[in-house]
Image (cartoon, rainbow, N blue to C red):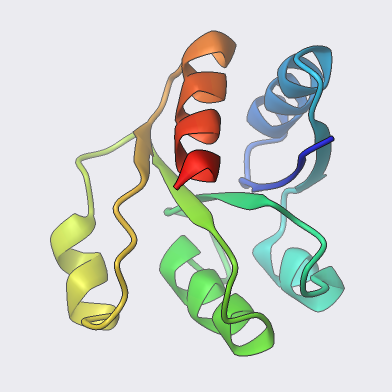
Length: 121
C-alpha cells in the first residue's frame, strides 16, 4: 500500500483528500500545520508528499526545503489554487527537478492519476 503525506492548512481539503485516497487504496497522513508536519516527518516512510504552497507559518517551498534536509530522496507534488509557482520554485531550488504542480480544486480520480504518474517515475 502506498503511503501519502498531505499538508494543507485547510482542514476540509485534507480531510476530503484523505477520505478519497483511502477509498482508492492509499494510506494517508494529514497535517494542517506545516510546522507540525515537519516536526513529525520521518524519512523513508512516505511514497509521496502532497504539499500546499500557500500556508501560514511556513509556505510549501520552505517546508519542502526543510524536509529535503531530513530525506534527500523524498518525492513531492505541490498543490496550488493559484497560478503555477514553477518559476519561483526554480529560483529557490535551481538544482532540483520538481515539476509536479497540481491545481486545486481537483477530483480524487484526477489526483490518483497524478499520484500514480509521479510514483511511476
